Image (cartoon, rainbow, N blue to C red):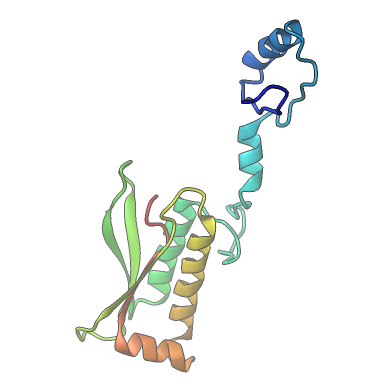
Length: 163
């Protein structure tokens, strides 16, 4: 750093920061301010609110791993003729990586794969896959493009690839 240039320092608010502020004052650095008192809280506030208390699975909201897996199980029960849950692996922490397989016939077909939740804090990708999954299941036989997709492919949706 060059002299007299602004500098950001992260410190533990309860223990380190008071001592650091005293030391900076002792050496004559007076133009000091705390930008964020709790970085963890700021990160939690940045994340979209969960809908854990909602009776329905809102497709435009953030959902936890457990909420998403439960919702997928519900969809498999709602569309038993062509929706099944498949385990595609497990995470480093031992959580199941699940996908929904949508196959409207027993015929062998090429596969279409869509996944989300690969990187941390990437909540919008899971919401996108959830939306695609729900629309594909609910619109088969009603929407020509969805029907054509499922007639031509076995479709796999994995909303959370890195749980």
